[in-house]
Length: 171
Image (cartoon, rainbow, N blue to C red; front, top):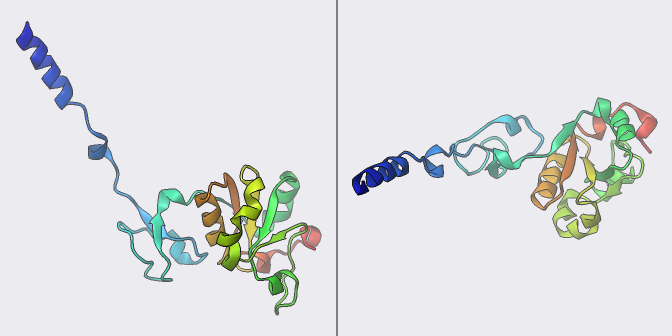
C-alpha cells in the first residue's frame, strides 16, 4: 500500500507543470513615442533601433487610444474625463507657431515636467484622463507614464491637435 501511495504521489508531482515551464517569453516594444516603431516587437530589452527609446514589455502598455476625428464626440460621451495637454506652455497658450488650439478645460502639464508633477493629478487616478499633444509624439509617453504610476483609465488621443478639425470642443 505504501508503494502505491508513493507511486501515485510521484506521478502527480512530476506531471504538474511549473509556471516557469509554461511562461511565455516577454515581448518588448518601443516606449510609446508616437512613431511607426511603436508597433515593432522585440524579444529582449534594450533600445529601439528606430527612435532610441527604451524598450518596455508590451504587456505594460495598457492605455486606450481615441482618434482625433472622434475626440469631440468622445468628450461628449465622457463628460467627466480629465483633459491633459502635455505640450509646452507656449503651445498650450497659442504662442507657438503653428497654433493648433487646445481642448476646452484642458490642464497643461508639459511632458518634460509630468513625472515631477504627478502629485497634481493624484485626485484623478480613478477618473478617465485623455492625454494629447500636437502630433501624438509626446502624449503616448505621457499616457504610459500615467499608467505606470497607477492611473487606471488613460486614453491617448492619436494624431494630436494638429489633426483635430472639429472646433466644437476646442477653445
